[in-house]
Image (cartoon, rainbow, N blue to C red; front, side):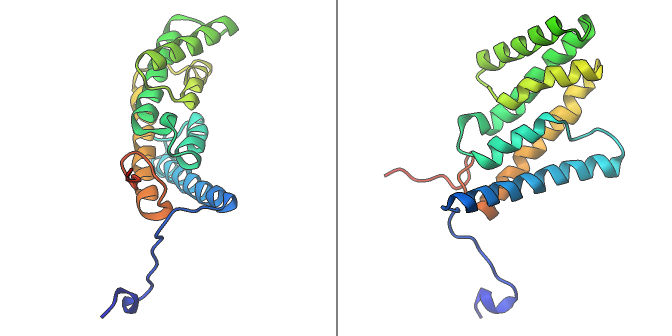
Length: 175
């Protein structure tokens, strides 16, 4: 008995190739991912998995999954690095224009030095300072937890649904 006769059977064999289809696949992945993170926050009645800069992360992870800036270490450690910088600045300086600018610049400096550059993470110090987040638990959740969940969701989505190359899934073999 074939797999097709066991009910609904559908398998995407290769990634989308038309620009509109690539855009649609990216939009669906981003929608599902942000929806899941928002669902976690809504059901737990807290801020455990979602911050605004993750919206920009969706552009890279689902829209440009092969970009070096979208790879798991960059997503997770880029966000974590800038969150720690933002929290340090929030504990030391008032959220004034000069401190916000220096905090973002410092976050970028550390992301580049640590080789975990992820452009959306550049917004974390602004979010953290303007939001008055002074506890380092904010770096654990929602920042670390949320970015790890993004990577896990992206690996599953690209591995089984979009079929796009991301991290170590669907690697194109070079001959």
